[in-house]
Amino acid sequence: MWGIIATWRMALEGVTRVSTQLERGGDAASAVVDAVADVEDFPFYKSVGFGGLPSENCEVELDAAFMDGGSLAFGAVGNLVDIANPVKVAHALSRERFNSLLVGKGAREWAVEQGFAQKKMLTERAIGHYKKRCRDTIDQGLSPYDGHDTVGMVSLDRQGGMSVATSTSGLFMKRRGRVGDSPIIGSGFYCDNEIGGATATGVGEDLMKGCTSYEIVQRMGRGMTPQQAADSVVLELEDKLMKRFGRCGDLSVVCMDKDGHFGVGTNIKTFSFVVATSQLMPTVYLAERVNEHTIYQRADEIWLADYEQRIREPIDGVLYYD
Ligand code: SD4
Image 1: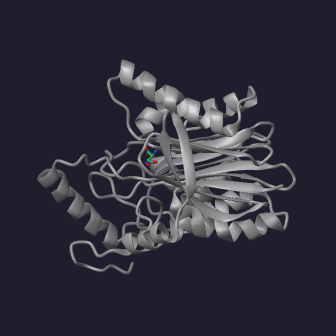
Image 2 (image 1 turned 180 degrees about the vertical axis):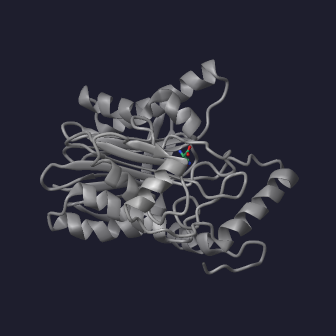
């Protein structure tokens, strides 16, 4: 048995590619790192890696993480600037005994020292998005923090190894130096070979309040199915925040247990995610919450075609190719 589950449609190409590796006995760590790196490299995914949306001051600061479910070793970077694949830096950090989480200048210095590829991550298209968003925020009263996605993946390999990885440019319009849940162990990601793994996307400030990924893994460990664990954690965190904090942002999670069963939880209208297992071709699903349960169905051809078109749409009439 092998399997991989990932947040958002943007994971599809990467998941599809590494499915072949997993089918041939490849390890879960390489699967999540390679598949997340594919998402980072693709310029039209505007919230991860190259082409990721900039922060308030128009800089692209990237967060990423990796965790090995066997040794529980993890590595993470926050506010990493102009390094091509933050997830690879996070993976390399997981092999170090100390300094597992590096941020900002220190993260960049270490990445450069280790020979990771440097790349200008701010694209013309992202600047286009940024300018349009600044205008829309003023004209239409939109929240500058809306509309942002993180790629997170959990994988199980044929040898029973499990790993998780995340990568994001964080909340759009975030303040310089802001770090979300994605590089924070237990919040944006967690993985334990003996139980399973989980990863989150949404408003990091709220996901961190529930140590969301850790909590999901613990609940699976206590006997909940992945679906029960994902649903209950999202629902209870939302309830608690509404009661005690007065509001709650977007929360979406995916998880997989050590037997390859998966679960999804969300409090948003449409949350897309991707799954492939030894029994299932890479498939895009659309999840929503109905009566306190997350339900999902395969994305149809119309939705998929519309997505392809939407991500490449001109911005203010300008087509960008970078
Ligand atoms: C963050 N959780 O930086 C990320 C952003 C995200 O869907 O996933 N948005 O808070």
